[in-house]
Length: 387
Length: 142
Ligand SMILES: [Zn+2]
Image (cartoon, rainbow over all chains, first blue to last red; front, side):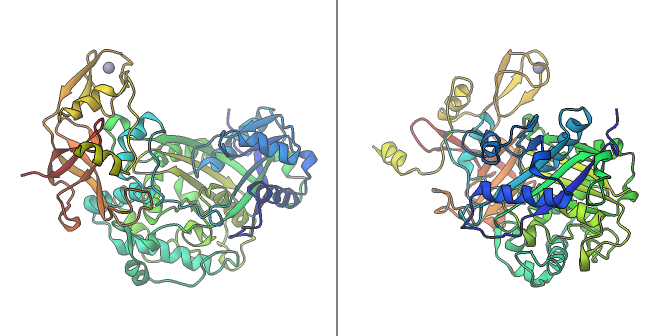
């Protein structure tokens, strides 16, 4: 049973805030839901499905958020697999709608990471609690950036990938941010600027790392049929895939990441080929995340990522445009930015991206990464089209 | 006395010991490094756990490691705001691939950041951080 073109993204909204000490988490989320429903031409009364992550101390914050909105949906999903969660939620919502479990499903995210002064990436991990696997890591000072840095180090060793090549990803992303009025950092940077920024965890520099912001966003997912009668041009869901990777009982090849499996599944299910993809939104927690993801999704061979990202090829007007919103590296990264990948891909497919619009954009790929590539992580891939 | 002073001073996170992982930590206390091997199918695994991930057998063998391995990858950390580590930067975190075939997350010690290399032969050193917890770290092989 194929899901291809049975469902669509009918509304999207990216909360404009990047710093909101005056707003609660649920307020940011609710404002995002309102924005996405307005975009779709629907109201809160139409919503009977809800997806968000396992927020809050209990992990069951989705119930609290339903309370906040006075919602009693027929379908709820709070899959929590890190930054990729909202990409996975989009596929779960599509499957739920196709199976008749709900009709209009909202996927929502919010965070006050910046105003709560939450140190994403370098906060270190707390001791004592955690899963069994954590007990063999926490004594050694693991950080999120460190786990990605170890992937970069190995890639450089095996394939001669350079710091300059990784820096190109940050430079291109900043160029895109300069064309996004909502982006947090908009002043262009150079490869030299990236290399001159301090090392956070070798070989990654400060400007190889995502920023920290507040933020929120929401999506409205419904059947393709219903979406065709709504306000905006439908963005059809063609295919999706998701999985996880970990240390594989100590026997993992660390340069093989979740994207290899989730990407293969998404392409098979969507029935499209790599050459059909007009633009991609690739989770960019760090520059190495992008390079490793592009290789594992099969856009280039393993080891060829350095050349693939070089020479401006990833620019909005280049051969393989990615992250046209300015990404987590420059626009916003409230902790888990998967939802923004879907939002920007949908806007590109609707032709709403102004100066950063990719020409003739018909099929877009979204890949979210959650957790850390160097340890446990998840990957969720989504292929979308305006046709 | 020295141990108690050390225990009070040691501010990095400590592992949670339970019945499933106790043999591993007790071996480290004796300054011995063991990994698990499935008694049914022979699959080796790290970290230790009660069931084989290959065949789900509960028959566990513990095999003693040589303590030698090679650096699989590493990073020198210059920023970590967690107590215990913010005082220790820069420090080197690494995956070491043991001769027995598993990769372990650890720290490289007695090693300058510019000295660390992938493929570098290393050997285990035991760091007694509290009376109950000894950590397996690695230094360049001598
Ligand atoms: Zn077995």
